[in-house]
Image (cartoon, rainbow, N blue to C red; front, side, top):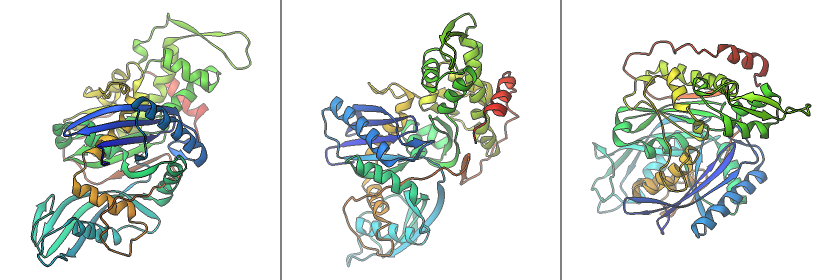
Length: 449
C-alpha cells in the first residue's frame, strides 16, 4: 500500500483488462474508480504481444484515472496460477543488533536466506507466506518485530513460477508507463479477500471462471492448499457458439451475452432471435434453448474437469461449499447449472462495491484489497521478493519497496498443485448430464489442439 492509502489492482485477463482503484482508511476499504478495456496481445492468460498488452493496460488505466480523478503511478498485479509451484522454505539468521532486538532488517535477512536456497535460477518467487517465525526456539510467532533474541528462523511457503511469466508481465507494465508495486498470486489474493473468517478456516472451494481459463482452488486453514488450472473458459464457450451456428466470433459473443443461459432447463424454446450465418445472406432463427444447450455442453466439460481433481482431495466436502466468480460466471442461471454437477452448496460471488457489481471485477478488486491488508512484516517480505532476482547472493537489508515482474507461455491443457490431503469422505460420481449428445459433438468435431 502506498503512502496515500491508495492501492490499484490490475487484472490482465485474456478477454479484458480490469483496473480497480481503492482507498483504505483504517479498516474501511472503498473503491474510488475502475477501468475496463478489451484485452489485446494475450492468449489463455499468456502475453504473446507485449506492445499490444501495454496499450490495452494504458486504456484501462486512463479510464480508471478519469473516473477517480487520481493519477495512477504504480499497480498491484495478479499472476494466474499456471505452472505455479508451492515450495516449503526455511531460513535462519543471527540477530545483528548489539541489544538483540529484532528489527525489520532482520526479517528481510531471514526471508532472503530462506529464498536463496530453495528457488531455481529459472524461477522467481511470486509470494512468500510466512507460516511462523521462531525466536531462540520459541515457535508459532507471527510477527517477531521488537522481540529480543539471538536467533531468528522463518518457516513458510513460497509460490514460484517460471521467470518468463513475470518478465513479460513486468515489461508490459513498464511499457504502459507504470511502476510495479508488487505481484500477488491470483487464487491466494481472491481467497483471502472475498471469503469470511469461517470460510477460510474450515475450507472453501473457489472456481474462477475466466475468459481464457478456469482456476479451481481450495482455501483451508487460511492457506491455499490446492490449485488446478484448466485452459478452457468463457472464450471456448463463445467459440463453440460461433462454430455450431456458423457465425462470427464477435456475433457469437454478443448473442451469448444477450440471450445465453447456463442452464438449458430454464431457457425457452419459444423465444427466438436471428443470427447472421457466414456465407448466407438470409438471417437464420435460433431459439434460446438451443443456444443454452451449446453453452451447457462446454460448461459441463469445464465443471467435470474441476470435479475430478476436487474429488481426489475430498475438496467437494468443504464446509464453506463452492464459490463461483469470474466473468464467465455472469451467465444467467450459472449457479443452478453448477449445482447439477458439483452439488447443492454452490453460490456466486459478486463485488458489492459501486461500479464493480459484476464477477469479472473480482480479481482486480481482490488484488487491491490483498495489498491494502498486508502488515508491515508482510510488506518487508514483499520487498525481498521483488528484489530477490537482482541480489539472490547478496543478503543485505534495504528498507525500501522495489519490485520486478514477468510472464509465461502455455504448455499444457491443465496444471495442478496440491500441498495437503483432506480427511473426509469422497463424493460419489457426478450426476450424469442430459446434454451428452452435444458434448460429444463439440468434443469430436471442434476439439481444440
